Length: 387
Image (cartoon, rainbow, N blue to C red; front, side, top):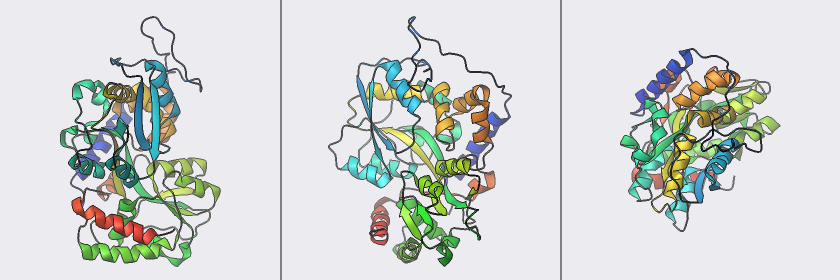
């Protein structure tokens, strides 16, 4: 069974195509205007910070966020601190499970976290999240409609989209003679010790389930037990689990293949075109990462200011420059097309960041599986073991 929101993903692609076909020139970006006659703020890299539009009223002097590793343009972070005079404190995690375990244990002082779609319903059920005030999210209008009002959070009561993408196979075609075309191919003995994999239980177990002909969101104990046995066989082929920077082992030549996210594959391909991103015949895993406000957020005003500023087109385009995932921000795409045509073209022309419609139609979204979550967690802990 494919995810119910697959048509939403197709809508995303169609919305993106409208942006791609819009007429845009190669004009140089203009210097941002400043408010109150002050001087423009410039980061240590020389990037001139856009003014907040609109500028939010904030009394907090700091903001604490808990987010994925290697996922934010430094200029975006620095500009927020500069234009608002707010200290942005950032802790990072490498998996949704790590994030959830820390937050559910309590004792944290975070204002915002960044869960993937499937774990948002669990966080809602556990009372971890604060319902968002859309009146304080003026730039939510910049997000393409296909990314909003999805099944994991109808009406976006608790979440704001950040970036999305796929999990698929990257392979060094210079060193691998028989390029895998399916998830099932990764079990071949010839790939023993040659694979890097993201440390993501639902994605990797999901891929394993697909090789058995099962739903990536099954709650059938017998099917999950079968997947556990098969996954144990795959672990023998995996040299390293790395969700922080799986591209590093690939680019260094330590491994030849990987189960990776969109952005990691894109960067590896830009470094060396021999790295090709293969959408497996069983279908890729589809996902969307989001910001959520935690229930005890002490700096909600700063959190809203961050979300609003980040979603500005002249700010969010930095994700296209630095972290090339599938981008939900129509204003950012339009800004990049007009002002940064080379950056935009690299993103728009890549089948990694813009998967073909048939690939998305064949994709599988991870969903909340309720109490069966513990079954997936147990499989991952037992099978991965000391790897």
